[in-house]
Amino acid sequence: MPTPSSLRRSALVVLVALVLAACTPAPRHQATAPTSGAASASEGVDPALAPFYEQQLEWKVCGSQQCAEATVPLDWSQPEGETITLALRRVPATGDPVGSLLLNPGGPGHSAIDFLPSFQQLVSAQVRAAYDLVAFDPRGVGVSSPVTCVEPAELDALTAWVPDFGTDEGIAEAVRRNAEFGQACLERTGPLLGHVDTASAARDMDVLRAVLGDDALTYLGYSYGTDLGATYAALFPERVGRLVLDGALDPTLDSGEVAAGQAAGFESALRAYVADCQAASGCPLRGDVDDGLAQVSELFDKIRANPMRTQTDRELTVSLAFSGVATPLYAQQSWPVLTQALTSAFAGDGTALLQLADQYYNRQPDGTYATNQNEAFTAILCLDDRAPAEPEAMRAEAEQIAAVAPTVGEFFSYGGAACADWPVPEVGALDSYAAEGAAPILVVGTTNDPATPYAWSQALADLLSSGVLLTYEGEGHTAYGRAGSCVQETVDAYLLTGAVPEEGARC
Image 1 (cartoon, rainbow, N blue to C red):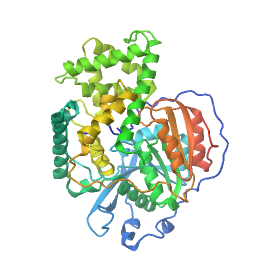
Image 2 (image 1 turned 180 degrees about the vertical axis):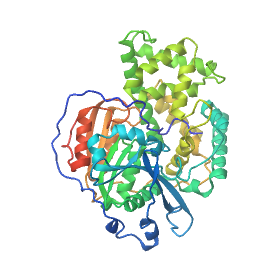
Image 3 (image 1 turned 90 degrees about the vertical axis):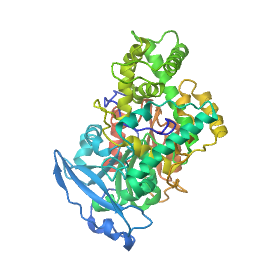
Image 4 (image 1 turned 30 degrees about the vertical axis):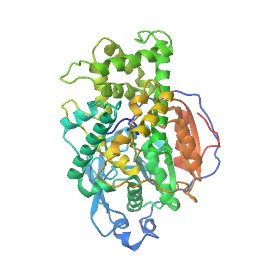
């Protein structure tokens, strides 16, 4: 089962917009206008791929949405071989549509189809009028030829499991248990397990662009969705229309750098939370900020030694406790929930933290899991990148992480154990993400984002030859749709007119 040393899902905990002072960055240059024309959408395609690019979607009514399925190759290097299906959901534009806005909420492994009602709230009325909102579950995710691994009870045991990384034997045990998990995934998923990498999913997106009738891709991706969008741009720069990449991942980072960056991000977010908590009444954390962080660390140590009781038949282990603490840090509006959960935990009741951990893992009250996001998360990341698994290398990395994140760093260490013996070969990242020749791409970064640190958005904007950075000065994971009018109006202007902000624009 994955350790928290890799990116987790990007679901926004709350959707409350902050009232901010307006910023008015002036347009610098224009992005390619979206167009819709099925006749030209598949021009220049390899004839071997033409059956995929020229397929006709059959849209059906699915409640308040429309649904369809698209077919893509299982293995893009063998387009005449097996195929898989991708599930799509669409909310038609409320006005005259200029094209489709393809959506991804992150993860990897989070279902865009499940998140579509939230997208309808995040995206402004003007954008909903101009675009058909189209959500799709990437290959291996949700209802798109999904990765399947274990039964819910086994997943419960894996998410609650507390590895012992203090000895070589403990590390070997972690490698073994993760390998068993991977083997279960292979047995239940079959050959698809070796083809759920990000580059394959990005190639799928180009088929979706074509079958939706768009000459250029218009896209909104959060968190891991920025990795997917950047990969698309690198593979198909001439097909880039208007891409919004919010809460960016730097795709050139290796797993160790991701772990260190994210650990520092959550440490910073936790520090900001503690300061905010102590400034209000009813905070269970005493003294100054350093004292408060020490009390959180002591709570983790106490739970590690003796799992905490809850008002369920499950105990709160320290692994679950960290997940419970991390979940409200994704959005500042959820900080009061963390205060309530910590207050209960300090009183010896871990129920609230367990509930937050269940939200993190998408576990439902009846013990089932709403989606396969946990299995898909591991399967995708183990194909994209594998950290060194030698004990000494992981120990050295853990020391570096602890130096930048003394409170939470332990939960981001020893990530190499997750994929050390994964049963299918690594695919790896692309050689370049410059996307030379692409139209302007808008990258949005939040200065104290815990899950995707601001430096990653800066790096991606520099990495993309046409990247333009919009900075939101604030807390929480991602910005568009929750961070007030300045971000909203700037991103809307880009999606609706192609206007990009001046260099150095901040909200």
